Length: 156
Ligand code: 4NP
Image (cartoon, rainbow, N blue to C red; front, side, top):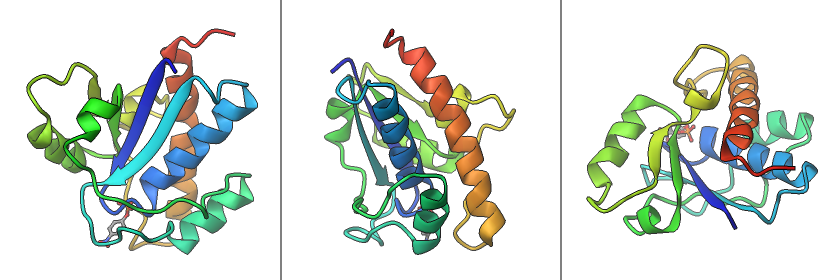
């Protein structure tokens, strides 16, 4: 295992489980599934134990990503000792993570979209919007996942 990635959004039912499912599948297709541990969590705990939002599941499934087995959980302090990369979907969640970060954390804490090429740094929250928002999440997440895989330097 050369890296471990935790994706974080607010509820852990839309954006971060989408990133979780997309990265898992991309790694699997590349034969790199055993090189990177992937998880996701929310800074909020209201949806803990729930599967991803049905809209997120359906839009992801249409592109071949299976999210139904994922269950929401809240970020815990121990995550900072379990993951080498903690990647937030937006600045508000990054700020909350910065406040939780122990002094000794030597991994990377930052915005997931810094690995992307769309010129955006935040994944817009699709929860209160329509179908287009969920497609946008997938577009941004697929692109940044490719960038992340390249940056992790996992080799061929
Ligand atoms: P997520 O979306 O952070 O991408 O999972 C949201 C899910 C739930 C809520 C907000 C955003 N909520 O307010 O319950």
